[in-house]
Image 1 (cartoon, rainbow, N blue to C red):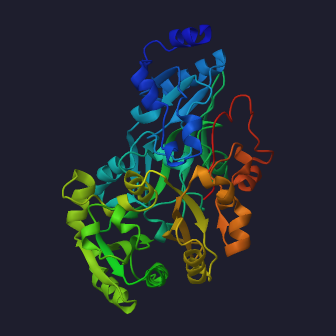
Image 2: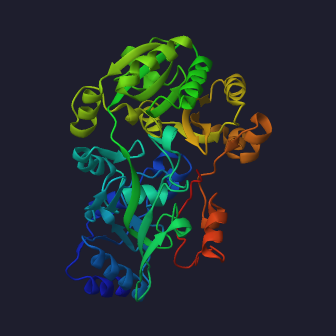
Length: 454
């Protein structure tokens, strides 16, 4: 407590909070998606929340935490799912939301402070007719620094790939956590040193990314007689390079009833695809859907879709808020025992694998598939809902084992709960970029972070 008191004195002039309600709110993310993490992290609390407004504030906070050896956890929008923003050892939560300026916008690129929310960035870019290439379904709350430090893909990945792909991030400004912090400008492969590291080895303060030309994104829900037809359509539209699209998500027939505002548009037993398509090409999309037996169950113009996203207009939220991990959120509101798994389907074997999953796990796995385009190829990944029960955990424990999915279905399950940065799928790239071991100092930098490889 003496160290904390000394730290508070060093931070005079910077806003802080230590009331119980704020400490609880800022010490949580969406770890409760996991029935395993929820009891482990429910009672974890910071001792102090610090709210910087400038880079100089961040430098002061980093120096004070290093000097007094107070644990430091970085927080963006708090929309992660694995306890990344939970302070296991107490100490300080650094809430970056106050650093939210648009630093500059040039043709094809923008630079933003790390605490800027993704939706606010797109609102600011709209008059210039630019937009972010991709964003998570938590666009309204997620910050760009948090997305870079803890995200992977999202709406737009069906065209632009993932944040780890070459060229997806142009530059990062990072403050080191040491008694005399340094301000580093990382470009090229050096970006990989902090990408997807959850702030464990540096505090991202500014992010520079390429931008895409603004498109009038119309929204469609397309219903199919069965999941296989929907997946075939998803693969076809993802591969159709002539059609501009921002989201392709496919959901088996048991999932739409969880979407309370969309469910009335979908008949019982129908699988659906949620699509964001450039409005001038919506007619071509409808023709392709018909080729696979699909019908347009719900449609919204680009103007209406933008109003729903930017202003909250309309009875149906933006359709991307039903995709990616928002699917799990909607489902949990109806069936609290659900959680989810991430499973990468084998390229070329997607249909066979989807059918095998439905056949062998008919009750406990509800299939939800997102499509991405990377390195000239289409990839399909399950964010499948899982009915997890502790009563039957010994029998089902294999569902969380990567070998189970590889042996039974020929696909890979992405392990979310990791405690060391070098276990991440991008570790080799980090090591190569750094020219040395990427292993963090466990005593200071790797406290309480789970890593989700993409």
